Structures are given as structure tokens and as C-alpha cells.
Amino acid sequence: MVVTASRKVNEFRSPRLSRLPQSPRLLVLGSDQGWHASQLRSAAIKAGCELVFATYETLRGDVTSRSPAGLRCGAGLLADFDAVITRTMPMGSFEQISFRLAVLHEFVRLGGVVINPPRALEIAIDKFATLAVIAELGYEVPATRVVQSRRDAMEAFRELGGDCVVKPIFGGEGRGVMRLRDPELAWTTFATLDQLAAVHYVQAFVSPGGRDTRLLVIGEVVHALRRVNHDDFRTNVAGGGECTLLHVTAEQETIARRVTGAIGLRFASVDLLDCDDGPPKIVEVNGIPGWQGAQGVMSTSIAGALIELIVASNRRGFHVGS
Image (cartoon, rainbow, N blue to C red; front, side):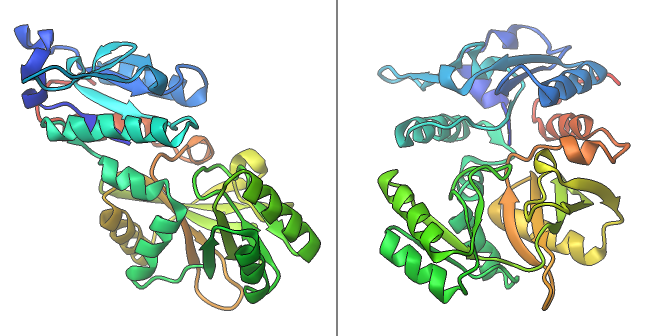
């Protein structure tokens, strides 16, 4: 997700208004370590941008009488940056996640431009809310039931065929996802989720498993990637999936643009599962996608395209060198 600061926000406190922004300053909310951070750094240098990192945990808001909220992070005022890029949000309590999103909502209220608006992110990180939007658009999705008790989860397990995938309603990269085919194991799993006060997200397994197509959306551009895992039903590259680049079809472009447009996303991925008895089913939309597997088979720099998207969406009209 990307947030772009407008002049209206900067008028409140930003010292950067005293000079022309020759070198755009970009803030990344997320870890400054790892492959994705390195990719963003290289792309920012090539684009002539200054890149700074800060963690979500350092976000804060200062509110005083008759004054807009001062939105800050470990790197300073958000308004002092030309754009903010948010990477994978760390786990937290309901209050912590709500506050982080509230900061982005407040930023928008004060005039900031959000490429993946907070409302879009709220939908995308919630698998139930996302699937409801997709189904409303008329696309095929796996039969899914979301309940709040072990008893109802066991009923869903039986009625969905006794072969189900259980996954966290929040989260990605295949973490916490399991396939259940044994009633006793299902009972134990749902009992554990009850103890954790977790929602039970129970989804019918879509055969054959281990094969899907990821549609990566960057602004108006859609890339298609084939993902296959011969040893597991999960296709995540981190879990052993293999990725190849496909020629994106007109139908795939339409699907990707309709789904991401309905949610309000500009940088996202849409995953379509292969189905033995019919057309592919859309299983998930990721509003903060990783791209390491995709980059391994693409010549275009995905980080570079993301930086270009930020620059093109910025309302302050700063100049970026090539």
C-alpha cells in the first residue's frame, strides 16, 4: 500500500515547504532489512529519491486544541515526506492495528493522497470481506463458511465435504494455513482456535491443489504468473512453489482490474486457483503483496514500477531523475 502526501497536509507543519523538493523523500513503513527493502532502496536510488525506513510501532499522533493531528513516526512527521510506502504490517492487538489504520485515515482526512486507501486495506487484509466483494462481482470463489465456535466449525467441515482448508482470517504467505481431512484432527484444530479466541475460516478444498495463477497489479498494468507446487497444496514460493511468467489475457486483465477496482487497490495481487471441474476460482486478494518470486521470472523491476507509480500519483509535481 502507498500513501502520497499532498501540499495541503504539508502546509500544517512541514519545513520542506521552504525549499523546492529537488530529491523526493519517501518513507517506508516496515523493516529496513531483507530482500524487499534492498529492492526498494535500489529502485529509489535509480529514480533519484531519498528512501527512509520507520516501523509501524513508532507511529503516533499528537492532538491539541484547534490544531490538526501531528502524525509522526520514528523518522519524523509524515508530512515531511513526499510519499509513504507501507510494507507488511506486523501482528498486533486490535487496538494497535486500529490505531495504525486510524493514522492513515487521519492523513487522508487532512488532504493526503492514499493510493491503497485505508478502507481498501481494511477489506484486503480481511479474507471474509474480500471474498464477499469478489462473489458480489459475480466471480467463482471456493465455498467458504466463517464461524465463531468449534461446534459451528465442525458443522461447516462436514457440510463442505470433510476436506477443507482452514486459514487465519488475517495474514498471508501461507502462514497458519492447513488442510483438514480427518474429523478428529478438525475437532482438535477448532478447539485450539476456540482457546485462542480466533475466528474459524473454513473453506472447501479446491482440487487439484498446488496450482494457481497470480495476477499482479501495479497501477494500470497487470502481470500474470503461474505458480505450481508439486509437494504441497500451497503455492507460495517461500513454501516450495515454482513461478513462471505468463502472457496476461484480456479476461485476466478484466478480472484483476474489476476486483482491485472494487476494493480500491492500486498495488495488489489476485490469486486464481485451478479447479478440476470448472473455471478457476478467485481465492484471495493481497493488498500488500510480496514480489520476490515474481521478480525472479520478470525482467521489469517491480520495485521500480512501484516507485514510478508513487511518483506519478504524487500531486506536488516533484521532478525525478532517471
